[in-house]
Image 1 (tube, rainbow, N blue to C red):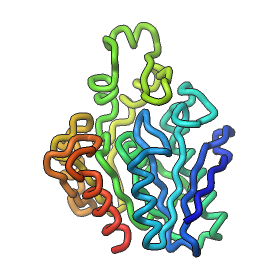
Image 2: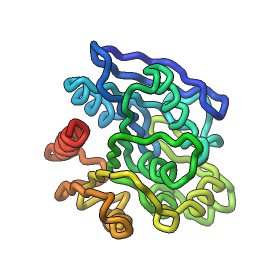
Image 3: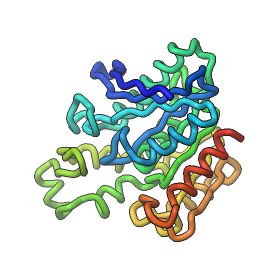
Image 4: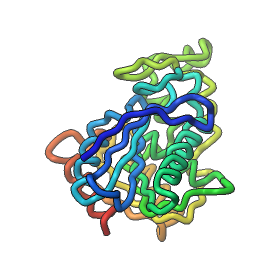
Length: 255
């Protein structure tokens, strides 16, 4: 196993903090792993997935969204377009590195899954055709999650001051304009897609309710598969839940 850490120049002109896991020989495919809100590329889920997939010859690349992890920019750069452009920048890096000869997969968690779905909704001249897509605990209604679950102060105070502090390892000044952008980009209103997608989610998700996921699936039953983990919450940290989720992901990627 080889692990490389480096910077990739974003389409937005800042550098993206990136980590690449590679098997000893040329990878069969590359998974782009996308973290959730307040997380980063050092996510335990991403690390465990990388270990599992390296064993079967896959590579994995992960990175930090603006304002997250080791990103060189602050949360004022945390916009939907910037996040989508960062994913495109990672894709471009893979395409150049492997001369467009390698398949690209996606494994995206929570907010990362929300951004991935929005990316699929937007039209790009040279859109990447993913081989496999897995969304873990997707934040379908990200605006409601920010307002009702993540926010640590009254919403009116957030609106009046124009920002709020959120995050875990790295505290971010989240702009009210970011919430407004989420409000304007609601997955259920914008949805269109031609990709097959596996969703892995706990039945007791306390951040991104599974009922929202099922509402999405009802719009396009032919393109979604839902793998439910009974009793699991958003983080899937008890009773081998994360292991079960990642074993399912591995099985899906190699199928």
